[in-house]
Structure formats: structure tokens, C-alpha cells
Length: 335
Image 1 (cartoon, one colour):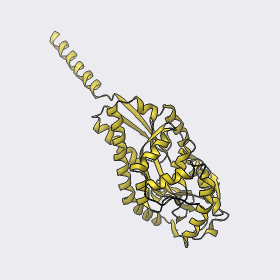
Image 2 (cartoon, helix red, strand yellow):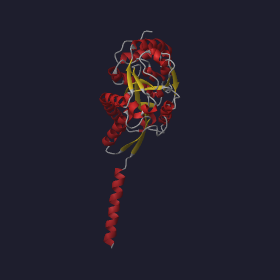
Image 3 (tube, one colour):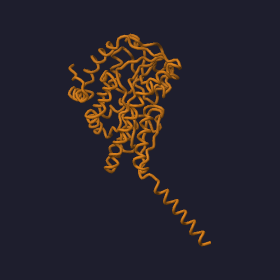
């Protein structure tokens, strides 16, 4: 009898010891506005996998998608306070906290994906990180989610006059609002969490997003019948970590966060390159009509000519814009 009791106690000791050893010593929560089957999901999965594997389970990353922890503005507030560890958001929603990040939303800042990648790595990434730190958060990843193509419920858009009279949902972004107005459209700021319903109920006629995000959000089920490929702004979604939380980590843990962010950024770039065309094909198959602009230079001239001079001071000034342009090899802006 005594022997049985001893064996039971030993077994319980082993079980408890194993459980204690296996439990993570640090749990990080990450919020994301988009669904899991989007570029944000790729970032979340890649970041989580890297951190948990490299820490041998000592750090756990819990991911929450589709605004489960609040809308993007709310999660940024919480990241700044240190009550939330990480959030992945559209860049326009970070601009109210750090005006210089608004440079990334200037119309036609980027001509192609190569420029976008160059502007989010190396010296350019350091410039953006230095700005972001003033707002209380640290970009670990720049999520690549394609150009913000325009969709709507009414008609194909191939020329600028086609947008006149149409209402488009845009983020709460002074720069994007000004861009749409420069074309004669009617932009309406609506939170991301309310966008699907606004489209479905006809509060607005259209919105703007890349193919993968459009498919993940199922915007074709919210009356979005037409998409136009326009390249006025590339949608970047930074994975932001609370600087208050970051500073509490050990130097080794801090480096792990940085390395995990780079791994996630590489993963989402690969995903974007491989899957954007597939998402476009899927949308065409369900009846979405894709159009091209007859003369995009006309759109570019209208937006750059009006928005850049109007918004230069709002996003940090001419010198800040030109320093950023120089960092990824583009000529300086001469208004």
C-alpha cells in the first residue's frame, strides 16, 4: 500500500513538473483587422511560428483576427498604452498617431512593388521606424497587400469622369480623402469594421483594396461588382509592437521579435507575389468585372499636382519627404 502511494506521488510530481516546464513564460497577444485568410493571416502565422519555435515554446503568440480585439484605431491605442502587445493595421490608421507615416499614403509615391520593397527595408525602414517610435510603437513587419484597386457597385471605371457621383469608403486619412476629391469622387471615411455593412446597405458605392484582401473580406457579396486596377497607393500594413512591451524584454527576446518580424515580412512578400493573380482569377470566376484605366497618367497628374503640395506639411514637410524618397533611390520632389 505504501509503495502504491509513493508511486502515485512520484507520477504526479513528474506530470506537474512537465506541465510547469512546458508552460510559456511569456504570452504575447496580436490583433489584426483582416480575416485569417488574408495577408495579415500570413504575417500572424509566420510571426507566431518563428517566435514559438526559436524560443522552444518559452514565448507564445496568440493571434486574433477580423477585429476580434477592437477596430484598428482602438488596437493602436492599446499598443501605445502597453495593454496590447502587437497589432497589424492599415498604414492610414497609424497616421493620426505619427503624421510622417502619412508619406506612405501620398498618391503615386510608389510605381511598382520593387519600389515598395526598397522603401520598407534598409535605410528606408530605419527612417520609418524612427518616426513610429515617437508614437509609442515599433514596426516589426511591413505587410505587402498590393495596390488599393478601386471597386464599386455601379459601373466599370476606365476614365476619371466615371467616378463622378460615386461615394467611396476610405480610411480616416486626410491624404486619401484629398486624392479622391482630386478626381471628382466623393470619399466617405468609414471604419474598416463597418465597411462591409456600409457597402452591403449602399451607404457607399465602393471601396479600395487589393485582390487578396477583397477576396478574404468577400466584398463581392457586398455589391462590389466592378474592380479597376489603379496604382495610386500601395497598401502597407505594419505589424506594430508596443514599445513599452518591447523595452521590458531581454536583449535576446528583443532580437527574437526583430528576427521574427523579418521572417514574417519575407513570408508575406512571397505570398503576395504568388497569390495575388490567383485571387484575381477567383474573383473573375464569381462574376467580378476587372477594368483597366484608359489613361492613368491623367489620374496621377491630378492627384500629385493637388495632393502633394496640399498635404506636404501634414506628413512632415518637403525635406522629410525628399529624405525618404532619396533613401530608396527616387528623385526628390520639386513642387
